[in-house]
Amino acid sequence: MKTARILASSAALFTALTLSAMAAGQAATGETPPAWPKKPGLSLRLGTYFSSNSTQLRLDGEDGQGTEFDLTDALDVPASATVFRARGEIRAVKWFGIEAEYYRIGRSSTTVIDRELIVGDEVFEIGETVSTRFISSYLDLAFKFYIIRKQRLDLGLWLGATVHILDFSLEAQPSELGVVRKETWFPIPAVGAHFNYSILPRLYLYGKFGFFHYKISDTNEFHSTRFDVSLDYYFWKMVGVGVTYAYQDGSVSADRDAYRGLFKQRSSGAQIYAMIGF
Image (cartoon, rainbow, N blue to C red; front, side, top):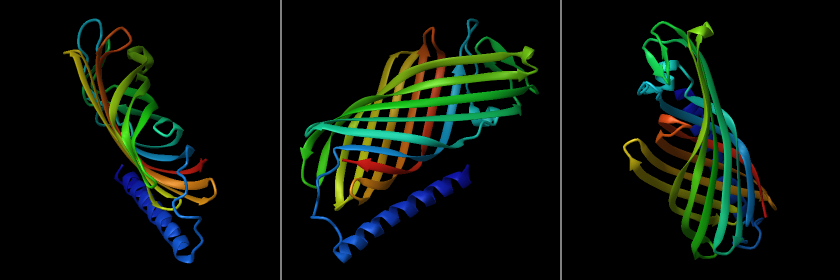
């Protein structure tokens, strides 16, 4: 996990420095277009996300509360994953825009557990061999409102939600010892601030920060903290490259038919991508 973080951080830093150097070099040689061209109103970013993840689960059953456990600590599920990530944004009018993002993280493991785990109505005993599959998909939607609109700086507020789609299973070997499978989804809303700034012609810095916490009852609670910072460089007309660092921390405590228990997910990492903008 440390190696993956070092590689991701090094790649992000190298890309950021490369983008800045390319833009500065063009400025020095006079190859830039007229100063401060119009910011892209429509953009699509496609690239690789080097993620580091921390996941805690508790699945309650009909007979009572289950065991809260960490996937990596209890089941040796890898914490890091390299996945495809897509993000699109459209600025419909000067004061309003929409951003959408999607990525999917799949992790699995097979290990001998060193503790008793109560998951739903199944009990996995110490010493059993358990195969785990955990797939988390993220669909993020944000409505952006631009309050300050300048030639180089835009600043505003946003509101939206991240839809968490979960598909996980635990299966003892042999399977007659116990099997748990669960598919569910839930949205975690957030509100916050965002900005974009033209550092140099064709070199843009974007940022988005959000938070949400709402407690309905002792068994129903939502929490979300997130931020991401992106550096985009258009090296030829509408085509460019960029790098993003993203952090997301969400949790849900629920007592409903679709899911009874606790889910906590923290994901962070760097993304390197290609993009087109208009």
